[in-house]
Length: 446
Image (cartoon, rainbow, N blue to C red; front, side, top):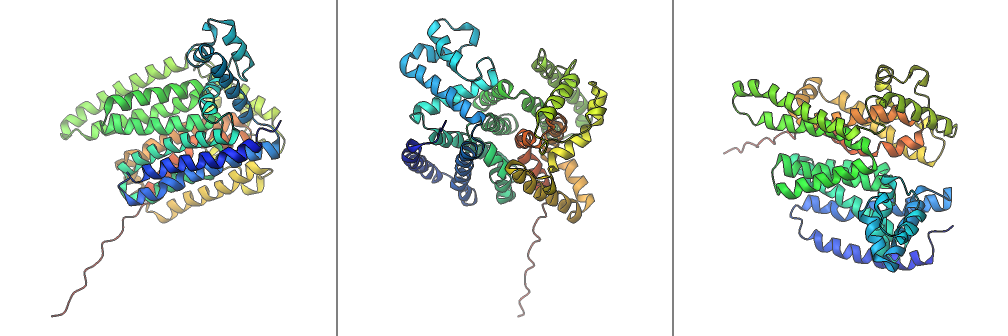
């Protein structure tokens, strides 16, 4: 079935003009000229990625989960037009609490009914489907706008922390190919990446900087719930990073050396306790429960490996994975390396792997360059004094280790690792930064 048709060719330019008109108007309110330069181009890159994503899956692969989400959005839109009560129940009630047979009539026909995470993407897409007259590429424009808005908020937060790195931060947030290809279209990744970006910005401005505290805390809670609903593992890796961020920020504000020595351990224990309580409640009864996480990881990795095409599968060493936490930890360093740097260019077998392979080559080159060109003394000092480097690395290492183990397939890995890419690149940027040397004043002979 062709989801991209003549309606797309007619309506997409019209919607593009409308969206760009609004963005150009908003752009005038950005005071910082250097930041302003990335506002329009940041969205443009997302648009290219979103539409190209749809074209690849329509005309190269012929299928994809993006079209299932779009179909689910279409059916929800049908409910909106024919029975607003049913649409309201689909949007805001649990699947087992629908009050009328009409609601079940629409909901049962929607792809991924029964899967709360995927069904949530259908519901979000239905809002855009209503606004776009159920046009696939226009829906892509709205998903791209959502992804860009989240990215822009995160960019503002990072610039607030490191104002001297505006250009470098923009490259890490807006222009990584995997992100604007996989996290701009009608897929889960667009929603979860946007939620992660908004959550990061809300935590910075609300908790760390204490600006518009209640609004930012509410936004943070909504974004965390979104990640919990759609991809819980992102939230589980984000919590430890936020915990360290909070601890390091507030212990740093204690001026007295004596009080810092006394209260820092108390804050650390308290923070670990709160994080553990939240963590354990989030995973209870899920596949991430500590009692069965290692076994579930082994089953998932083995299943993906068996179902993968020969060219995109990789073997991390499943024979060493016995379904225990110990077996999981043995493979953890290998999982981190695979997530960050593989597939290598000689392992490329298809388009997805080509995109990731070339990107990984650049990431590997930049990583080596940082540790080659920067003095080790400076790197160690920045790890001690720049809390955000540690925040980025905590999130990256927690996330990449388990994803590298579970994926067993480069095609899957490319999509799974999207959330960590800007954080890892920003960590490299901070470590590599060399302040410009002050210009010497020329002596004037009198």
